[in-house]
Amino acid sequence: MEVMIAKTAGFCFGVKRAVDQVYEQLKRNDKPIYTYGPIIHNEEVVRDLEEKGVKVIHSEEELAELHDAVVVIRSHGVGKRVYEIMKEKDIELVDATCPFVKKIHRIAVEQNEEGRRLIIVGNENHPEVQGIKGWGNDNTLVIETPEQATSMPILEGEKLCIVSQTTFNYNKFQDLVEKVSEKRYDILVLNTICNATQERQVEAKRIASEVDAMIVIGGKSSSNTQKLYDICRRECKNTYYIQTLGDLDPDCGNSVRSVGITAGASTPNYIIEEVHTNVRIKF
Ligand code: SF4
Image 1 (cartoon, rainbow, N blue to C red):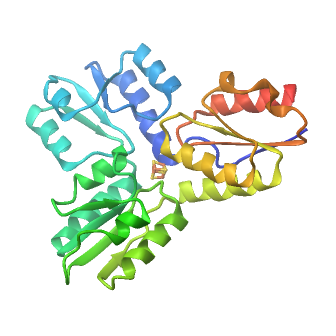
Image 2: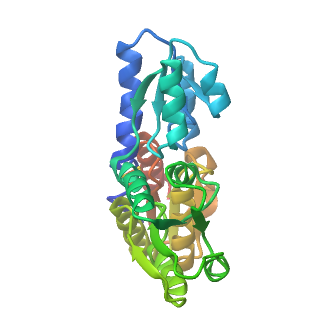
């Protein structure tokens, strides 16, 4: 049995940095520690942190109730209002927003100042997109489908700036930009898709096209893992989406000669290793 494991599987730079910062705070801060939303889309890591006393808050209302606390902003980032509340309430801020996401926040502010309307290509409900929106203005729009791109309520002569959720699929982004461009607006297009995501997707696609079965590891609510799964599934119909080794169908190795493994950006290395070892021994 040949096993091909993706070099790009697992924690990206931004997620590793955010998780490390929470563990770092545990070592050196006596105040209660909170994360604004789960630090990553991985139940195992979140549970481990909970056991060590780190609590998760989910809303600006919960944030406003805190006193004498430390709050870690995760790699997805947050809108401007969250920073304002922390300042008003004198909450200690540990900002683990990924620098690539931070850059989009800066673009949002600068382009609004330049008079351009911000269009975010991405999933409206994703926290990263919510955070970016929180740096735009009331005119900011989010689009995810060709239908939304063609039916956007844009005024004649409006100038636009299009950015992307960092984990969005590059080809879909290009298609949506083309759809918007058909209307001949004055558009500034900034491709803010993160390289880590692109590289992981390209490698996953290549491996999935070469193997008989493909395993994609990641949290069920991780959008980048879901996209990896979709990409791999198109190349290899025997693609399995698992969170941990426990989810792996023991029969998935039956009558296959090669297996590929990749993992989303929030998957800890030890889970990837566990799956890798198990596949090598049992299949
Ligand atoms: S995927 Fe890219 S943008 Fe997102 S956290 Fe990781 S390094 Fe940052």
